[in-house]
Length: 448
Ligand code: URA
Image (tube, rainbow, N blue to C red; front, side, top):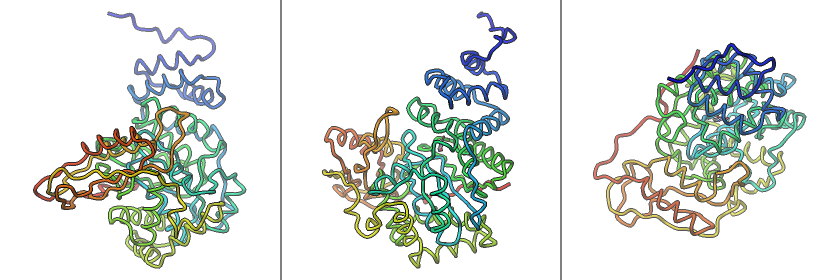
């Protein structure tokens, strides 16, 4: 039998090692310990190795809802809280917990803005095997994503939508921890995801937030129960902090849409805004945008809001708003009409069906890893993301294929990387004799 540490023997001053030990041993952290940790991460007095040790302890041992709420507040307080109250209209944002091929932000932000919502959208970079909106947007030549508060206000007043990356003044503790979690396998934790998302969303100065909480084999929350706990916690914390929040639980077992990567996902987003996108991607983007429109008080029900969003989509108002956003932020608006202006990989390889039948399943986790293998994700914090490589799914779930038909087109720079991706893709596909039964994308709604 080991000897239990005596937690009553305290040093006069708090030490990171003691906070790590407490969480390692499954104890709840006090508000003071959480504040100490967040302050130390923000000002750099706690080194990365201690920060990641605590992250790993939290991942294993968990946190109570009270600890998670305090961690969220402490991370919100690590920087400023933006104030857009001088801009008329309700400010509503959307955030996803991360998926493969999940490009809904690029579609719904301009679409909701075209319907009259003020959208200050602050997005993240790739996390683990999932893509990041900021990395995707960086494919657009010239587009500036680092705007200061005054520039954001001007953009919101003029265009009604701004797409930015996290500034160093908004939840800086999250900025640091997000990058560490990405490369230390410490993402999949309810309290850490909750605090990461809600700290920056509360600090962002919005009135309403729609959360897309993914669940399934390629989501950070593998089970619906875990996704529901995360969604409920985030919605509760948002509502208590003055940000009206709602969540959809959505399935993340197969890739969303047909493009996975960075510039390829920008192309698919523009195609969707032009009314030529895949059905699953369009439907989810519209469902999320409709909730933003309803939360902004522009329509009384989700159904009315959805019909308004669909009308805007059909009229091309979303794609024109996206053009305006790109132009206002210094990007090349001609990418909307000419995809050759986006970075593209020099080489292509097509993975074909080994036999005939119906595509019964595509493992989104394997596809996400294939995209990372091509260079579209990070393995170390300092790794740069390559916007050009990616993949196009030519045969999606439910499609009928014959032997030799294309399943996936890989866009690559480096043959070794493409070979690794090809192996993952081949294993991701299941082809069977009978068509699969249709699966719902939206599983539940959390509204309090
Ligand atoms: N998105 C975030 O901003 N943070 C997470 O931890 C996961 C998804």
